[in-house]
Image (cartoon, rainbow, N blue to C red; front, side, top):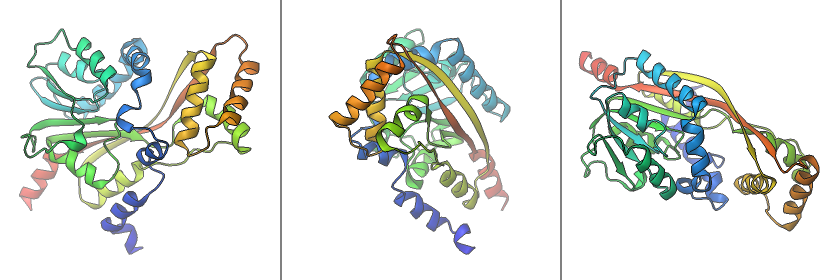
Length: 296
């Protein structure tokens, strides 16, 4: 029972977990910081269409309910992608520093922020992992540090580095279970002879360590889904990426099995894919933490 309340053990367990999303991607030869390069344009379109903007607005409204005010706020958006949040933050009057390293996403981000003044949105294309936040002057420099579904969070040390940049609030979102993917459910049994099973991810480590270390925070778990339509070739490539991510062989046999299945199941060359899962959002309230410390 004592181990359950021992933060050091939980930090070590997170560090040693071989099935974290970042480690799975690296085992598959995928650079986590470049994993969206091939779908940057599609991601940007989905982020700024009506459905995407409504999803973004729901998250921002939740932040406002927790006491965040964006007018004149300084925000560090880590893993900004094409500006899915940097843009609405700036639209609400915030000064935003957007960290993004994917060249196609940076190009889209530059386009999306072109309407703002140069000093309102600043792009930093250096990987956050390589940044010396002390030397860069980022120590407690931002009213809000925002990390949405970015692979920068992969152990407690990475959480501490992000927290070190925040003065008032820090928002972190990450999957609360392995992502669900209708195509994977279809092709997984063909390749492995087993059904695909989801499992919990490291969101549990994050929440438990925040609790053990005495942080004040609000958390929210939601279930979200989206539907896309792609060609059979694009679906094949998507399926092969999933196999690599889960350390399964990507050879001519598996490629042929999947290609044959897609040809039979989707003769029109249009593959409808449903993606989603459970996603965790946590807002760490550092100003409440600091007030409590002063009172003690």
